[in-house]
Length: 318
Image 1 (cartoon, rainbow, N blue to C red):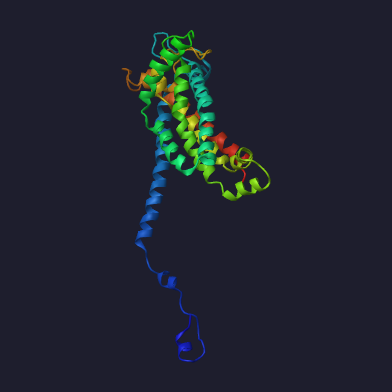
Image 2 (cartoon, rainbow, N blue to C red):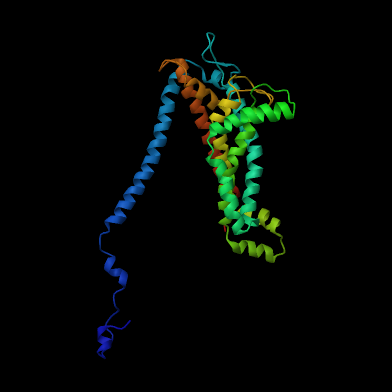
């Protein structure tokens, strides 16, 4: 770019100012408002989390002032509303573990398989059809899943077709249907993570003689590990925190579950059932809701902590 002196034939005396220099000192109120909105959103997130912890912690402290934490964590009988009350939470924990494990055995292989199909094998036209159909499952209300588990899976499949020795409820039926509900969550997030892997990695693997499946499992999977782990962790969190399916199909009898064909009450199922009762606010029975909720919160927090450590240790950067 020539200066005025150069156009007049004289020597150049300096460079012309860049177009962006005129904006350097200008105030931009729009940018300030955007920064303010982002900071406000971050602050609301932190305040909400702190509020949840306080709302769970204060009644829980009142509960543990009357009930020993050892009895709560290791007791094998849960009967907080009986005359001879007992507050051992292990029956609720075992039922929750059964439904969560069964759900993951269904959701993880099918979810990751769907993600591999959509990200690595399906043509763009097929992907545009399959992915919306898969995500329709995520929009079905969980109460519909609950009645489907109770009427069809438990009543028809397990009892009538397979002739299994089970009653009206079982953690198996609840876990199977919960796994179907979680499949779209795991598949969608894992597929996005795999699709974000640079194509140069796939091309380099193919140049070394690897086929498509070897490339997917040995190159794409490690590169997208953080997103895949996030998908599985979100699926675990949904399984642990699911309420309507287990409240309808798993049963309401709190007992140590040793067989998936048995019924059992999960932690979320107890909260849903007990919250509709007539417990007096501030009573010991009422505070059990918050003690169980705090334990559920800590379990979810532990799962997320373990997943973060796992990703940091095994993640492959590219």
